[in-house]
Image (cartoon, rainbow, N blue to C red; front, side):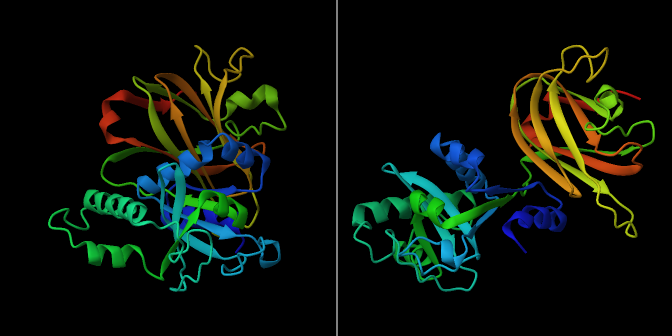
Amino acid sequence: MTGYNIDFALRLITGNPSFSYNVLSDEIRFRIADNSFWLELQGFVEKGFLCGGVTLPSEELPRGYEAISGQYGYAILDAFELDGKKLLQLSNPKGVADWNGSWALNSRKWTSRFKGMVLQRFIKRKSREKKIKEKPLILTSVSKELFNDKSFFVSWEEFIKCFEIVFASISFDNSWSYIRILDRWSEKHSIGSTFCLDLLGQNPQYLLRLSEGMEVFFLLILQLPVSEKKVRKIGFSIHKYEGKLVNENGVVPSLVAIGRYSAEKAISLNCTLNEGEYVILVTAYEIEQDNSFTLTMWYPKKNNKSIYLSRHNN
């Protein structure tokens, strides 16, 4: 399985939104430069979501990093910034981490002060997860758990040199709620955007009203009969509601976010929406496609009374 298929496999296995990013793409390189990609990945890790990366092929790895395997997946256990240093803790599924990078455990960079800072951060994090009690603390045992040969630390700069794919699978604890809609495209409500832009608005559309801003996750899943082998493309977009639906009287409201068209059965989107009203347009690439789908939106449970979502065209 290639790195580009990991998010698709995770969506099918977990039923949750999953994402993969090509670190070599212009889009991600730009986001690395403006620090937004680091902040997004750090946020996923802080929330306890399953994250990992796939390395470059062996022949493309920079000289000096032969200790890691080419085209191999590593779990991301942590991502943090201390004293201006961005570090990731990675785990080797094989169980042994023979890492010789700049933050190898025998490196002089691991001063007593910095190791103590990382230990305290680890303890606070585990305390929040209720996996250990903050008091009394046995620093020796905690240190052995954190600094061992089953995981290793890399700088953010080393990571983006050696890894081609980053993936994240979103898992939701009891602090999240969701709304799930089961709907379908039919002959009347299946107009592919590429073929018939003037009829695009006949696709299912939903009005989303938020009384406060929040982070949201979407997952669109195409329901196909087991016997059907045909590849179908689907997608969805979120527009600012300006008093009209998409293509109502020829109007296309401002685009806010998009779940790209893809020949996959599941598409994820993570975005932050401000207070206001939005139109969600769920599109089928082919005309007269007749298939059901589910659209699920996850949001913080504390915002339960701040959301309204319903079908808005018949």
